[in-house]
Length: 244
Image 1 (cartoon, rainbow, N blue to C red):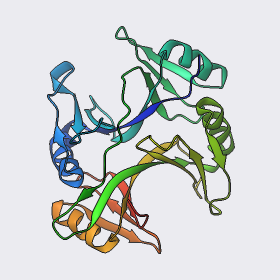
Image 2 (cartoon, rainbow, N blue to C red):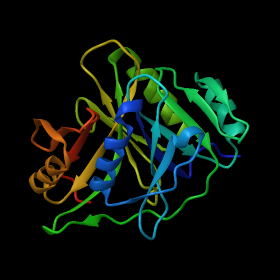
Image 3 (cartoon, rainbow, N blue to C red):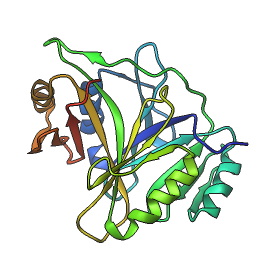
Image 4 (cartoon, rainbow, N blue to C red):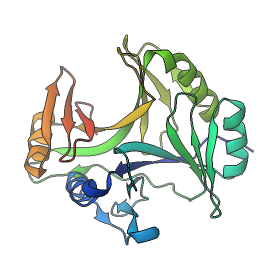
């Protein structure tokens, strides 16, 4: 049985006091509705796109700093977890509902789940005419973890790997019908565990950044091809000039 994920969802995990303003912000960014809250004390919810399957979810952490983690949708989470262990991952929890929580060799948290999904959402069109979509996850790899993480994720997913997109970036290529592209970034500074951030594609980066600022974000840095942003609770993400 293949362990390659047929769908990937990104979880925005927020510290307890940050959950409500952060969820409201990301609803505004995506234009998606919020599902009924679930789990203990309503700690989980889904950002629901119109006429497509979801791929963005939110969680209120019990403690600790916010982060992004990924759910890899597979036919059999148990078998997929065993394959991940052989590649160097460590299991954090095997839940009675069937999902498995793991850490990659560099410390990135991810889950194997079996929820079915197959319909990718279309980009949103905003009143000014610009379009955008959250369409990419970027794994931020400290240099001491970079090689091991690249080998791990390439082997686990079975996806094609493209090295040297630029000196600091490489890429995994999931199937075209999946909602999230995968970028791997080699950080300059050593130390810490592997983390991740989300990227948006837009056909008008300046207008999109202004829209986010109006929703409560701030501009951190402007590069030639992307703008680094921080949401109202400090979550870092990027707006890129790629066409959505």
